[in-house]
Length: 96
Length: 362
Image (tube, rainbow over all chains, first blue to last red):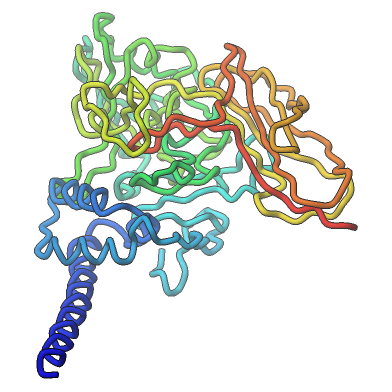
């Protein structure tokens, strides 16, 4: 029983850590991506882990100081992975 | 422009499909494609870098340096004094249709609408270069736009072989459909008829004839295409990637739209077809998934560089689901493929176009 409780506790901790990682990734996205472009550019894409990793490498090469790369990658894969359907894009408001 | 919560407005544009708002990447909805010339307020926008601060036409200077006998700073008035020419030409983003590739590749997930046809007016680029005494031994022309990258994002600089720069249809356009090009590159943008949109540099501020091709990001590795077709999803060999120049033959169906519902009765299938540096010879339409094909009627202008509109009157015999296909053939005999070659950046999608429609009893 004690062992089961301990295992449950560990599992809970693991899930919490995952959520914490995703939250950290979202914060990292806001910190490192928004200065140069809108998030729409990211959120409209559905890429594999490898492809998201390459994008982060490219942006690092272009001067983005990504502090928490692991969390950002986990967040991108969890939300914008190539197994997720992409919603249709928004329309702009009439600018005439 | 406003934040996402209030909606995004782009001055001078009708409601457009929004792929990115900073910088602006806007796709034309198919319902706006009802004329040979695409109106400026409906024309797609592709920005790699933030739009430069508005250029004061009175202060505008075009630097011509490098392999020239008279390094020059030309004003807008200098450009306006040269003979003005008008070239109708279709401008297509190199990545138009990227969203159709499988597996998915990074980049704006364009559908059919990163393309438009306009009448571009301005001096020939060759006349501008001759003003500065261009050296005929220069092999390439390097072109810089006024836009610059954020942080260490590379500057948008392109180069093209001098032969294309000196072609009589290659312009430095001051007008787009008779108006200032505004978000499309005011006061001066390159018109490189038949070539990919990336070559059509906006806000041109420098022209440099040179012995060699520019080596910046937007020439290499950017905007390159595999010399030999790759298995989908695989990595290219960098040495086997080539600069994209002329565009392939292509057609797009604009009406009916994919997954539309029609009432049983006469309808008109519409679209447009274009072929890079060639003209469109014919467009064939199938309404039964490709078993039988019928030749569409084409608009009269049969020009290199510019698209042709096509129509086909169609009266379905029965209700039900129909797969409509369009297939263009150009004056050089090129035909749209069923399956375009997958490539890691998702360029040059030109597969036979396809929409599905449901026909209901009237």
